[in-house]
Image (tube, rainbow over all chains, first blue to last red; front, side, top):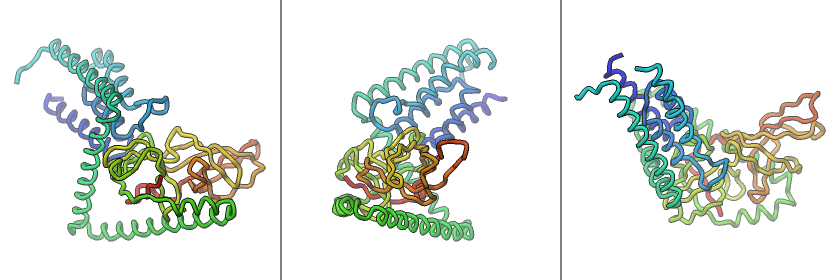
Length: 89
Length: 262
């Protein structure tokens, strides 16, 4: 896959994630985050997770109000990093 | 464009990820310390994006393109709204009839309560936490804990509670948000309902208790107001309990306005 098409896919998935956070059901940004994480070491994953939590997370600090999407984003970004380093060029 | 060697590219990517992680942590910390300043800003911007996209979609729909589809969709939507309105009305009347004497005082209280009509300014399906936004905030007199109602003022169905208030936008948590549990009353029996999201909840009650589809559910947490109706019952004779599924008799995604009462 050429550098340009890789960038285009990354932009498309990022745009899908960011716009999905505002307009689409919650699984749309989640799928975008997972797809991005499988192929790229993308900072956009963290941005999408943060955006979902800032938009929709109720106020207050409790276990039912954990910023789940930010945590998922951190896990996807840092948890999959060794795999990406190993298998992706 | 400068081409980096794979090793340098990896280093650069890793550095970018570290910076992004730091920014995310700082943003969350800043938002927490500042009492939700960042949340307020992001939510305000999202309501602008939401209304722009809604306007754009409706202008495309009314431009003459897809006219047959548009007509069918409009008719479909009108019928759905009519069904929702009738369901709310029926459930409200049933509830009032069932608990006539006991609720008289509460109904009187609710009818007399002041409040305001607020538009829904976000998607009601996007939130993974069972929340949505209304276009009224502290400037309009909304405070945390206000009840959000649809249907007739005061005697309508409670769909949520104001959770986070900004200047002109408030975040509402649905009554049956995922992971929440709410005390309610079904045929006069106190029960705890587990929220499933999307206006649905579930509870388990004894097989001996007779429950029917359409029975109303009220909650003392919302002044004895109606919160839902029984949508389905799963009964297994080998089990001591039956599962009762509750739903809000309105389609949240069809709503345009809600009523916020203190």
